[in-house]
Image (cartoon, rainbow, N blue to C red; front, side):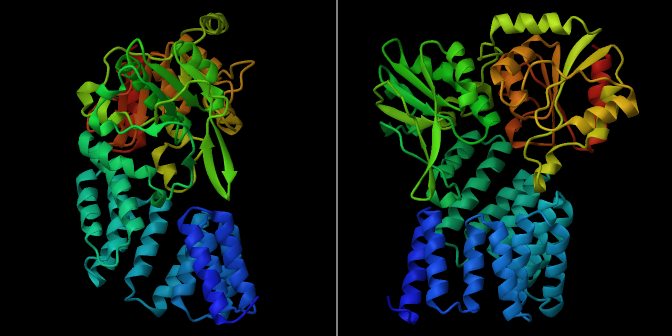
Length: 510
């Protein structure tokens, strides 16, 4: 094999083509081959490091970019690239220090100010990030990347109108490629939904399925993809496969449209549901006329592919779980007013009622965090000590519904507040989701943030109080939670302490 410059360039082209097509392992192999073919040219460690970064291999990216920085110690761009890797590893202080060094050398470089703003957003400080994006745009008006990330910060702050204005300006920026456009439209979708512009929001939300959206997973399922932009009339008498997508909470939330779809299919239609394996028994009980089975995601040619092994239904058309919203939920008034679409196991509900009867007062399930709390997601959840007024409410027995490691928080409540939060016996709160749904149905109330367990409580029709950031997109421009009509909402425009004080006052009034 030739190891000349032409071969190096050919390998780099192969790598970029594989990366664009989502074949991550093949892309990285080609980048590595180009590096070796170049005689391990130190200059290529930067290309290799940036490729690893784009492919989500952040530890490898850091190592490679440190090697590159050693060859170009005066390069502000080398520092910015390494800062990007550190930001993705949530080592924010190190990233900020590198960017400050780069700005000391090149203070008029808009991209460095933008990078600094991105770090602040991921730290959960979108308000302070705006200063850096504004400076980048002062230096270069119309700078697309700064507009895009300033829009993110504005959306995090609940300013969806300002975010949409920035997204539109970013789309008009020069040097915008197709992938940039897809990512901007997808981000704009959430702000349009947050404004209550549901028809536009759901239409833009289609871009999540584009291979250019950053989504690595693709679907390999039978049937033709159904276009819900045309409505549901063409579903009559056909067989439809719905395939779950995204996170577990979203999977439950969007499942509220399944009864509508069953009616659209009519008595001669057939429905199959491919869901997260932990949800199969719950969904099978809730939708007994549907074939319910677990989807599987496996790596094919280095890319994750979602399949539906064991499917018996002869499928005419298929769709991801969220896609029907375009036809079924074009406005908030189209959400059902009757709560509950999932059916918990009645025997397990009765079991939990007997267990809970041993505790005094009303039984309140408590949720306070997500399994994913890295970076900017932390802003969506109040620190546990902010729950003090809620936990001090007299006449209540609190029950832990929080999955994951929460021993420290339970000990703090016991030792500092004298509140013994019941750890329900004999249940895995992360994996026994059918039993979690039954437990939620047995409680007098569930209160917390919108994670998977909160969505299960809402979906079985149990009383549920949501604590949320101000103007969260899932409120769909309303002051309620349309997905679960029985839910009461406590938002935090004036901060978490005030929101939780209001929740505590409402609990006292029960």
